[in-house]
Image 1 (spheres, one colour):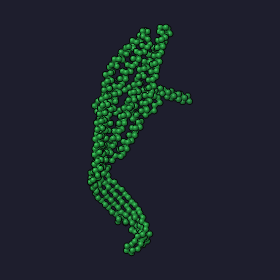
Image 2: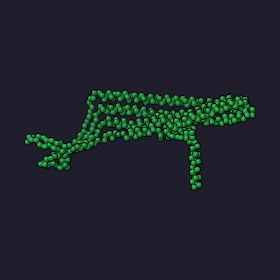
Image 3: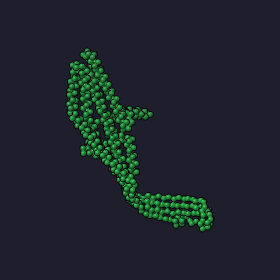
Image 4: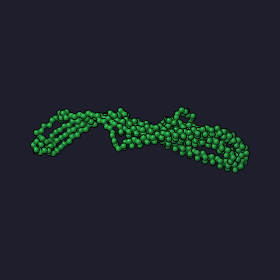
Length: 433
């Protein structure tokens, strides 16, 4: 009994310890979880399966179609017998059976339709890649915005330790009379302001974490325990071109689809050749006439067989120029989709150029921020000594400390932004995580 109680207590302590543990999440984990849970991606995956099921190859287009029909009919009434000129009963049963087969030997429209169906599958796949690419860009943006705030909070909390130390120190110095009460009031105000800034940063961080987990469709009740990993240097292919961008690939496939539409319309003016085969037989029986003998069912079916085999050539001659007009309109539509390729190419190139410019700006700024950070650290150490000696008051010291906080955050954020831009450029080129 005591052993069971001990195990239960140990289990509860283990659960409580888990609740307090940090949950580390990397960008890769967020993206993988998002891809697994995103409803839009699941819907598009089903669209791909649907397109694959609907696909008919060229060979399949030329497979024969076979149909069988059978019917049974009854005729009740009377008719005039020409030989006797008398009216006779005409109650008859008819059973008819037909087997028909037809196969295309030459059909340009079927060939174009098969090409169109194949392109439709590729379009569905590229649509999925577009969704994944845009989704990853959203996660990347949300992840880094949250990471910026998380790192700011770390810097603020580290500086807050110094504020606690100085507050306690000034309190003691005021008590022994080495500092005036005005210094104590100034320090209390500065301390309260830092507490307020930390609280605001914590609230913003919690909100951004919740946004991130909503984006990847994960219910996380322990948001406060989530810690985002600072990304290490990631190796991306330097030779990758924008040709892998999913929007650009989709535009190219859409152009091919437009050409296939034009081919299908053009096929309406081209000849087609089909072969056909027909088999039929019937059974005949006179009803309610005792003096009439009916031949057996099997013998009639065998004797009444009829077969037909042939080839049919269809050559369009004239349809009021309707097909030609539709073909011309589809050619214009194809030219439009071709221009969309150029448009998408220009958009992607311009976006990548802007991001490369941002990267160069961050790199150039990094050296200056590093220099400012060094100056701020030196100024803070000097101001700390002056404040301890009573040379400067709490207001001046707080100003210097805030400058250190700002420069430290600016430098760190700049370093993170370089990594962010690198990963964004890779996604714009079509490289997936």
